[in-house]
Image (tube, rainbow, N blue to C red; front, side, top):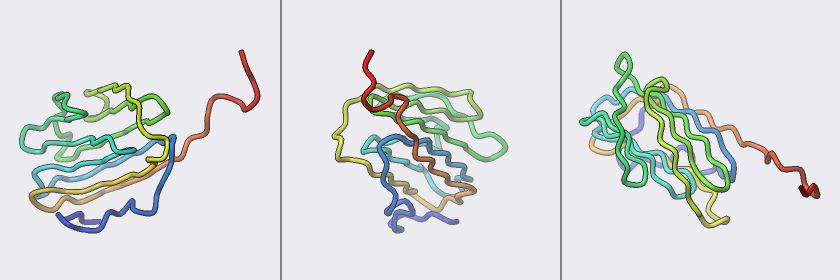
Length: 131
């Protein structure tokens, strides 16, 4: 699927609190691609080949002309992996429990999404159990 600036969000109908999101893309002419998880932007800067998460930058080189992102989201943070595991950015956060949105967009040109998979995760905590 091609993703162009201003295009409708392909994840507009997806909402989840706990998620495992896998995204693989070829940058094409896009200058950046952003995956927002519960309002937290995870941006891939194509020109610099860097991952930008909440203002933190990390080198994330393309692998065979592609980038693969994996974002794990729970109630207290994100874990972001890129470049086949060469890049790892953990981010603790406190977000609104009402914000369960996912959003993906390209800027500055068109990117080609090779795959986009969202797995909704269950809680590790069993209801009613206290320790």
